[in-house]
Image 1 (tube, rainbow, N blue to C red):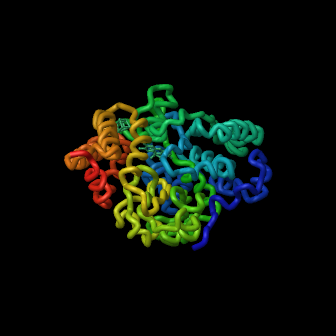
Image 2: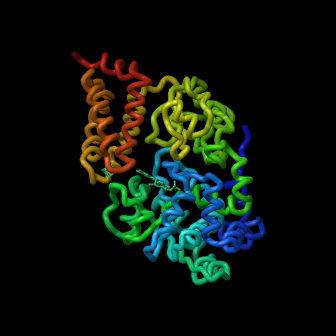
Image 3: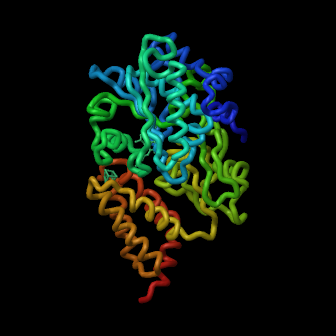
Length: 419
Ligand SMILES: Cc1cc2nc3c(=O)[nH]c(=O)nc-3n(C[C@H](O)[C@H](O)[C@H](O)COP(=O)(O)O)c2cc1C
Ligand code: SF4
């Protein structure tokens, strides 16, 4: 299995603030192409490429842009989501630091395509150095007459502002991010209306993930037809797989979708498990994705294959757990995190996450009962089906899948409990 670095290949080839270095390496070909064909054709090309969002939900990018472009209301906004708060996910930072002009070029093209005069990049507040780099980058970009009046000498105008995020998990969710940008309390919202209809300051807004945006200049310079030759027919392109957990070597690896298996990723790129023992479980799509058991590691690296196996590719944050670990301890670690991150807007998630955390802690400390397992299932399923946003709908998935895949781990801690 080999990497195909269409997004990460330029990383480190130029000094981050050196716009000329980027241009000399083929940069801005996508932007020039976009300005030459016009906004509608750009959207058509992105639709033809089959690009889908890399922020977790996998929504088709071209269709999202078209929805915003068709809205009559003005002004429109574009937001690049660089919050990157999901557990096991650290790919966007590689692009933001390693090839920032690629991301900036993508933002300008996206804003141009949907007709947004103002764009924002909302960067995780814990990425302090990245925020500083981007603040300087925008100054350099203005000097080069990129954002501002007349992108690259054209008649279109786009301004770009860097926003230092709050470093909260929920501010990665698009509606919460928008509320945060409006200086309101960051909470999930019921949809519709979608941000493309009523987003920032009530206006049509597109929110896209950093990796999604990095694909844009690449698609426009290579052409949608060539791009579609990469990856699988249903999921064209590459994914930045973030490998972490019990592997010898953590890292971000850019692979065409479907080009190999989870096992190959873990063994060839991760050097196998830390202890050399087998793989007990994998979360293939970040900390809120359902577990796959070690028996499923021959699954192909595509969302379709991973869904058939019982989980989802989500953010492609692949977290590996080796044999010998108890599912109860793993799930406790996850709920320690998500238990602090609910925004509190809706009762199922606000109360459910705390109750599930309490039960898991009881089990972990050898004080749980068989009824606790049933309560975990009931609360988890209720949160998944009636929570307002993706946080409440997803955080129970690892717990529910652990109960299904590793019941013996839960039974073992109950057996230790005093009668
Ligand atoms: C709780 C929660 C956290 C999220 N965090 C992020 C994030 O950090 N970065 C991101 O791009 N998308 C995140 N998303 C997804 C966004 O809501 C949105 O779908 C995405 O930014 C759209 O971009 P895309 O279409 O390019 O994937 C999160 C969703 C939820 C429910
Ligand atoms: S599901 Fe959780 S994070 Fe989302 S709106 Fe409800 S309380 Fe907030």
